[in-house]
Amino acid sequence: MDTVIADGEPRYDARGLVELDEVIPKISEIDGDRATFDARALTTRRINLELRWLLYEMGVKDVTVLNPGAKHSLGTGILTRCRITFEGSLGYFACGIIDGPEVHIKGRVGWSACENLMSGVVVIDGNAGSLLGAAVRGGDVVVKGQTGARTGIDQKGGTIIVLGDAGSMTSFMMQRGRQIICGDVGPGLGDSMYDGVLYVGGTVKSLGIDCVEGEWNDADTELIERKFRIYGLGQPPKFQKFVCGKKLYNYDSLEPSERKLVL
Image (tube, rainbow, N blue to C red; front, side, top):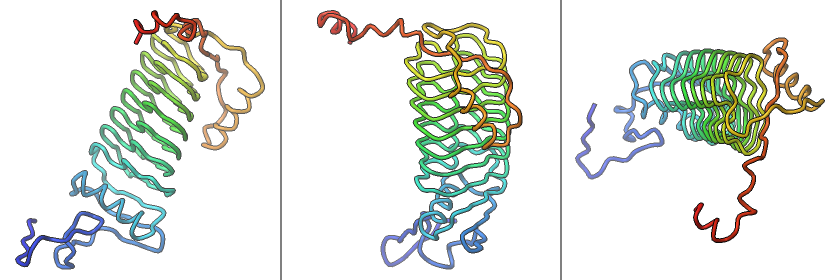
């Protein structure tokens, strides 16, 4: 509904709504530090503004979003400790650039979910599209289904756990962190990775450039058992470990003239 204010420019609150009671429809049901709202008829922008208003202005710590309708870019840019539950599937770019939240998505997600996650936890009950966890810097991403191609591309930290299969070029250009894939993985695993550790419970179609099998140790066992215990994932399968072979670690040895050519 368009709102016209005769005496000058409209004033907006934290939800992007005009500060007049009669034009701000009640959306959320707030009970102490918990809130619930139905997103069925709301736009992406309106949903995200409502989340920010609840978390930053109203001091709510636990929000449940009903009927998200697989809309894109939901739950992005949340930079505070809280809990958010989406009762349904989300579209592309879900929960990107977040720092602190514990998010539970009771459905599937599209491409590029959890991009640039800095800290916190995102648990996805269904499948995830390609580019899950791109450039993750910290926190945990748990997918109880399968993921598409390039899972954890350019990963810089944190842990990605996939209970099903993962697609081609998983962990491409990985720089740091861990990936735990319980199922099979497509071709090009760990291609051009610089650091980090990969654990695969199924078969690997092919390894990428400079990705080699690593030596298992007690720290690997402790990590796997701890993550599975924290998220109630049951008994872990037997994993293979893969790391960077470091055959591409030759940049610093280049002569200055060669380095200029590379740049």
